[in-house]
Structures are given as C-alpha cells and as structure tokens.
Image 1 (cartoon, each protein chain N blue to C red):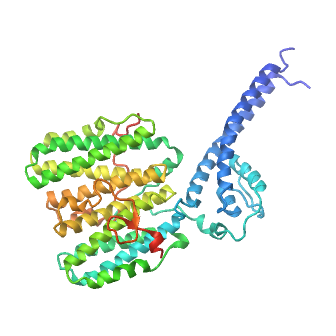
Image 2 (cartoon, rainbow over the protein chains, first blue to last red; image 1 turned 180 degrees about the vertical axis):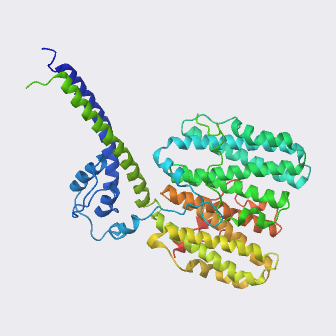
Image 3 (cartoon, one colour; image 1 turned 120 degrees about the vertical axis):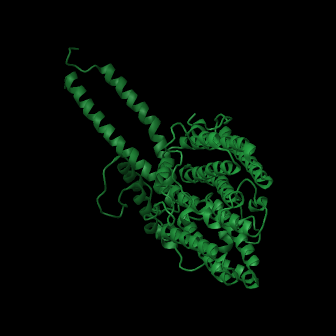
Length: 292
Length: 213
C-alpha cells in the first residue's frame, strides 16, 4: 500500500460506525411512521398531507427532504385508501386546523403558540414545568404563613388558611407527578421568584391590605403560570391535571379581590378580560424555571 | 481502480455535509409531522379537536342564551356583571368557532337549552337567576378541565386553558354575590373537577355524549 491508497481497515471501521447509527435510528423512525399509517381512520390523502408528500394518485411536485423521501416510499407500500372512511372525507378540513387566535387582550385568547411548539418538541419540559409549579406552591404556602402575621380580620385569615391548605395539596400532587417521573420532590420555595417579587413586598408590608395584595399577586402569577403550562405540557393528561390546579388559583385571586379587598365583581376581570393571560409570567426572572 | 486518500476525504466531507443538511430538514419535518398528527389523531374519547371545539362553542352560545333569558329579573347593580359574563361567553364561542373548522356551529346547544329551559322558566327573582348561573359556570369550568384530557393539539389546549379560569372566576363572583361562604365557591375543593355528567350533577362538566349538538 502506498500513501495514495485507501486504508481499507479505516473505511471498514467508518462503514460499520455508520451502519450502527442507522441501525439504532431507523427502527424508531419506522415505528413512528407505523403509528401513522397503521391508523385506519387516517386516509391516504391525509397521510400524504401529513408527510409532506403527494398522494400516490397525484402528480404534483413534492419537496425533497429526508422525511419526504421516506414518506413517499412508505405511502407507496401502504396500500389503497378506503373511499368510504370518515377520515377520507375530513382530510381537507383537518389540514387547516391548529391555528388558534393568539392575540393577548380582553377579547382574544393569550398567545400560547410558542410553548405548545416547545411541548411538542420535548417531554423534558414537563418535568421542568412540574418542578417550577411545585416550587411556586411551596412559595405560596410559605408566603401565606408569613402574611398571616399581618392579617387581623378573622374571615380573611380563615380564607388565607384555607388557601394555604390548597397550595399544600397542590404541592403534594405535583410532587407525586415529579416522583412518578423519576424526579426528586420539591421541598424548597422558588427562591428566584421570592427574591424578585415576594421579598420586596414582604419587607414593605405593614398592613392586612399589603399582605392581601401580595397574596393576590402571587395567586395571579401562579394561575398564569398554570395557563402557560396548560399549553406547554406534552400530554393531554398533564395539561388537564395542571389546569385543575390553575382554575383554583384563579378562584383564589377572585376571592381575594372581592372578599378581602372589597373590590367590585368587575375588578376581578382587569380590562374586562375574557381570557386569562397565558404567556409565561416568569420569563423575565432568571432562575425561576427549576430545571433540576 | 484507486483513488487518493485526499480525494476520498474530500468526498467523505461532501457526503457528511449533505448528510448534515438533510438531517436538519429531517428534524424539522419530523417535528411538523408530530404536530400534524396531534391535529388529526382522534382522541381516546372518540372526539377530534375540532369536534370538541365545536361542542364548546355550542355550550358557550347556550350560556349566552341563558344569561339573555335570565336578564329581565336582574337588578341594575347586577346586570352589568351579567352582561360582562355574557360578553365573555360570546368571546369564548367566537374563539372556539374560529378553530372548529367544519365543526363550527351557529346556534346554541339545543340539548342543553332544552335541559335548562324548565329551570330558566321557573326563575322568579335575581337570587334564582344567580343560583342557576352559579351552577352553569361551574359546569362550564369542569367541562373544559375534562376537554383538556381529550384535546390532542397543544394549541387547542392552550386556548382552552385561557378560558377555564375565567369560568371558574365567574362562579366565584356569582357565589359571593349570592352570599355563599368562601368554602362554597370552591365546590370541588382544591382541584377543579374533570369529570363529566348529564347536567344534573353541579360538580361535573357537561358530557358531550349527552349534549351532542
């Protein structure tokens, strides 16, 4: 062998490495596609639309890419469509779905498109959101405990005590989810949110109204965090679970406004809003997301 | 046939570049495929996202109709609140209708209207109207908690998540206006109910299998 010859051993090693990579990846991709094509309710036209490829009986051009090429091969192999299947008749309408109103304000749902895209990308975000939510619940428990010292009205104190109990139950439920996913339960408050929002308010609080205003801010931030998570978590079950808590936080806020601050019913809905904000209220607080 | 090592490495680098470019496209298209699947898959409950959105729209329109029917017995102090809630429900109906596609509806849920009409006709005073609305708002909130267990597309879930807390807050406002104690405005305790029923249980949402529009 001279210097210009191929090193056969090196080539073989490289080829074996490539083969190992393909062997590991392709079955997972094949499984994902099998889940699509194995669904009898999805017609061939619709499958073609989902895969970004032309249906076998159409002649339109298709974009070239890894998924497209594989999709064409798969569709070619997966047989004929059922002309009378329900999905075949709804394929056209399905293609246009998924564009929800996204303008934040009193008359439109909040912009939650970004988190939903993130959720589709990774289930890892689930644990981050669950940990963050749990840390906020712990913060709420601790804050109500601190604020109780300033609350003198028995009815308000009773409500605050009840709300603290709710937050402890939420914390326990979230820790159950975290433990079930193999994570470590949260036992400490969210220190970043405490430093950014709660501590300044606690330090300045002198009256019962100050304490209730702090609780209100915390409840509304918590509810908004849950609404954000309601569009960001990766499974329907988790999204529902998180909103069974988020709805209650919103109730807390409404009670605090009307019963503790004597605000009018209309004040419960700032700017007459008909949609609860869904953007992440913690986005500008460094360290607020509990990633580990 | 022989090629030089240098030539081989150049070819390998070209193949690697091409591979990496294709993998980028592959990842993006796989991501889009997953999102598309969310939209097209039928849920475990047998309802697709658009059908659920259309159902929710019909329920919201029924709430608008119910508030309209109850309005004559409301006092001048209460009427603005009821009107705001009615506006909210119309906004919710519009939002659901915008994403319901072919499943969008133009009229209130007829089955629900038929079910609540005897109660509405029996309302004689403001307290009766508020009590009726209190129950309906709770059932709406629970309906959405249940809907979230079925919605496959996170975008639909996100929109629903912005609406559920508003219905819950409606119920709180109505409950406190009725003079209920704080415990009573958390009818299902520390967690919203995500159960569905036939409308007779105030602690369960409105089952689309019963109230299919």
